[in-house]
Length: 369
Image (tube, rainbow, N blue to C red; front, side, top):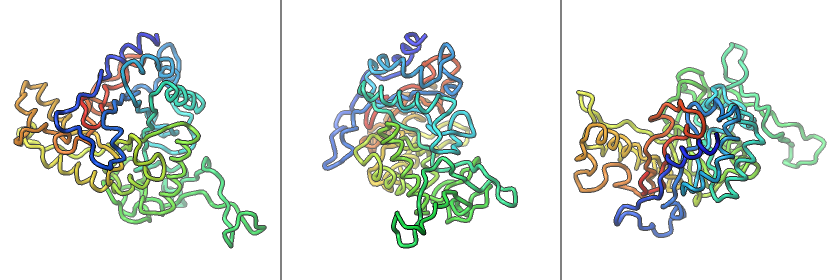
């Protein structure tokens, strides 16, 4: 039932963010400062696309649990990718403006966002824009054409006017020019990738101004028409951090709670155990955040790796670095570190029905999840 499921959500959430002594002071003139003590809960798991309890949709399940979600103390709830997708979980998006997914209908999503906002819980969308599945094959049978039939109509006029007789409908489709030219599978014709390669779907060329402009239009539609107020950027290693800043600045703004999934590799010993020193991982995260120029926080995968090893093997000496600080990103840059216990990628089967599929909470920057 919804009340029983909601109790599981409440158990997953942190009661409050726990500031680290001397590390939670607000940086001067930081527009992101209002988010330092934010508590976020993930509102889905890998199996949530199968629906909620008693045969209802996942969106309907979450909507019924809003009072209990609010009672956890969560300020933000991270919702699943909103768009139609080749994969049921939403991470291979195709028709961006089609919000009818395995999680529920477009109207159910709008209702959920509206009611969450009214309850004081901010809805955050999972934004998957590193890659996108094409829906049309080219003359050689390659999946490289995006028809964009759900995109809003645009007019193109010779002199820039909008009411001229010689105005024609703008071709909304994207071709191989929107795919990076070093894509390992889809033979794109755009510029080189600005991040890590992605194999499962065409890797979008974020250096292309039209791609960025039309993605920005879509993000603003999610904000203004659907009701989202923040972004979780999926696979942020896949494109340059400067683009995250642009997308954020032109949509929800630099003061919104935005977080990126920048997941570098941890350092391991030859025997498969975790190295004590995770400075290379931390430095990689800090370098990426520098590139985003303060526009987003990042999930603290370094703390996750160390904490999991320390707890699992009773190696609590790992919980302080050589300088006496916390060993993850939170020890170096707490104002942009989102600590967490688990998410849909890192742990838990999601096998139970109901909102217990929601993963463990992630606390806001500098907090303890």
